[in-house]
Image (tube, rainbow, N blue to C red; front, side):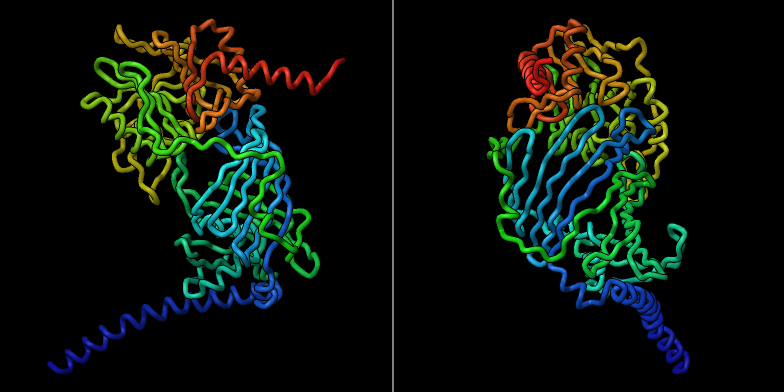
Amino acid sequence: MKSILYFVSVVFLSLPTFAQNVTYESYDKAREVLDRSITAYGGMEKLRAIENVTFRAEGDTVHRNQSRKPFTLDRTPFKASYIIDAKNTRYRQSQDGWFPGGYHWVNGFAMNKAEGVSWNVLRGSMNPIPNIPPANFRGRLRMFPQFIILNAASRASRLRFISRTTFDGRAHDVISYANEDGLEISLYIDQKSGLLSKFETLGTDPYFGDVINETIFPAYREHNGQLVPTGRVDRRGGDVINDLKYLDVVFNASLTDDDFKKPPDGIKPATPAPTNAPSSTKYADNIYTVSAAPDYNVLVVGFQDYVFVMEAPGGDATSRQAIAEIKKLFPGKPIRYLAVTHHHDDHAGGFRTYVAEGVTVIGLPGEKTFFEKVMKSSFTIDRDALTLKPQPLKWESLEGRKRVLTDGTTTVELIDIGPSPHAEEMLVAYLPNEKLVFQGDLLDRPANNDPPTINDITVHFSNWLDTSKLDVARVIAVHGPPSTRDELRQGVAEKKKSENQKVGPR
């Protein structure tokens, strides 16, 4: 009996030791790879001597799930300047980019530890940002490989060896570690050079579920004794989303607090946006918008026997939030139909959640194949409502450019406005009794109710309204507060006048 107990105790006590050895072996191999990389960058002392880095980036933004047509990847130019002050937890960026269709944006952001400010150059306004979480700054550090290697070294007990593989035609060791925010990061270290070629994280895409997020440093050059990446390529789910070159890199520049507090000259404080915004806004009997996460409005119309919803922004969590509010507004009534203004993921990324509710999607013909593909996506990391409650896609294509929903009292007309500069197919909802139009991205205004943004997309929409002869008093936006038809006309007229003044007499 004693011998049996001895045998059992030896086996029992040896199991944790065996498991610990496996973990340690994985760490030990990863540590060896990381130490080789530290040496390649000049050693730990040289890495720790990097207090800050200043650089510019130029290249393309690639509009995955934001292009004019589904399954395409429109490119627009992008340029920016950055200051990353790792020593003092300070950061500044100025960015200039475009969305498809002539939507130009120029903005900036600066932070000094937990305090920050953002600004919009084209609007000439700025907003303070208090209580910035530490994760915000840590994410900025990952724009430069040296800071990533330093972060991995500071988290040494989290290091694990994954495998050896080939990337970009070269042999690599792959190790991983968890950063301060719990993000698991995989590092691809070139076996020959010891340099970081790319890092990866796992995430969830609102359309395509489980995805790998990659940041690639394609090559390096030597500059003032430091190895500098020539640029950065970001990929999500295999698709390129940024393709940038790094220019004018300077390490350890002389910086002051003003570099991280003051926006450009001529930028004035914006009128503060209202706090504690209502969860829903009533426009007429049975007609509401529901606030879905920051800066999204969802149209909700209650008919006699059912509810119609337009727009499914964000993803599963946002749609769950919206659906909960809709059921409070119309208890006992099923959501029968969903429509979305266009296929972009910030406007339709949560449509799978509505499918799980059994709704029928009213969509544009050219989008059907795209949404059928989204239905097949695998969500194993963050299981969405459709994964937990599988349902088939019930789809009705809008034919003849118009679909009318009515119960004799309330009427909604879904209208295909045709190709716009922003998307090949666009839907708006027109409520003739209330003289309302609900639209997405065609006319936006800030949450503080400043004048609406007027761009090429807005001008196109205004021209369409003129041609359509619809009796419209107010325009409800997915983004921001509503506008009047007169405000839209005035804004378009001012834009045309400004453009004519720039061109001058011919």
